[in-house]
Image 1 (spheres, helix red, strand yellow):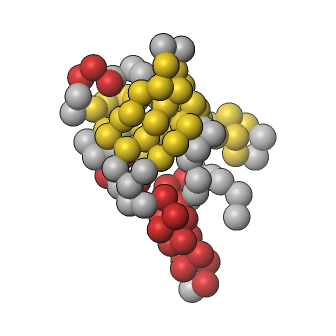
Image 2 (tube, helix red, strand yellow; image 1 turned 60 degrees about the vertical axis):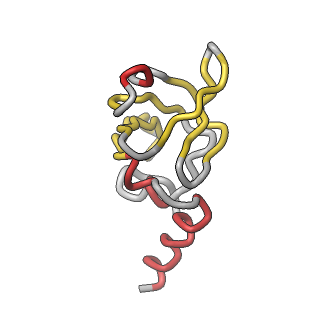
Length: 98
């Protein structure tokens, strides 16, 4: 299944460009770059100033994807991403089986 605004939270986010729109840590707001790693609780973003580890919980991310060859910005609450990446990706398979 191709990545789309409606199923982004079930896909791999490593490699996507992202910007922090809002965060419980005010110093994280505005950070932008490319996602290079992800854990259950954090996302690592490669920025011009080095890698930044951002907590998912309490953070609002804006991911850039290409949907039908058109660049789209998709806002995602970090709480929706708060799980192990491999488990989140498995969930899309469960949904597809229904």
